[in-house]
Length: 123
Image (cartoon, rainbow, N blue to C red; front, side, top):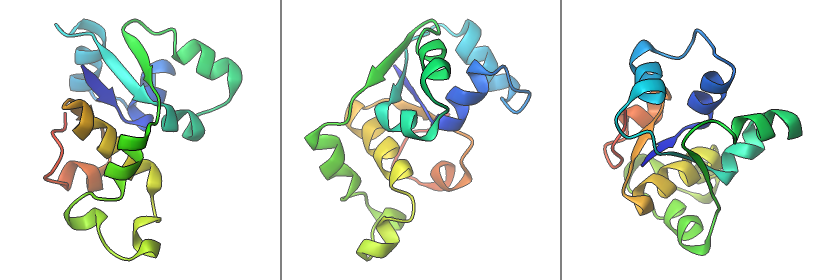
């Protein structure tokens, strides 16, 4: 299973040219077409009709937030640590990274900060 960062999911559904050829190939023709998105991504994405369409993409399943993901997001090592104010700068990234870690799956992203974060396996 591969967890999609919000931007990758939005770009795939909208057929954006911003999606890299590598990511498009994995999403459309990859061997393991088993993808998921954090429910938190729904808060960052367009509303109702878009979400309905986006969740109907082949191989997509919605991962709900649960107690373990929420706790893990507050315990991420290195750059996700810090004061309460620092951690709250981007709680979406923290929750998505925590989800990938707990599911033990790769995270597809173009987010430079997440790509540079050594504690999660990214594509």
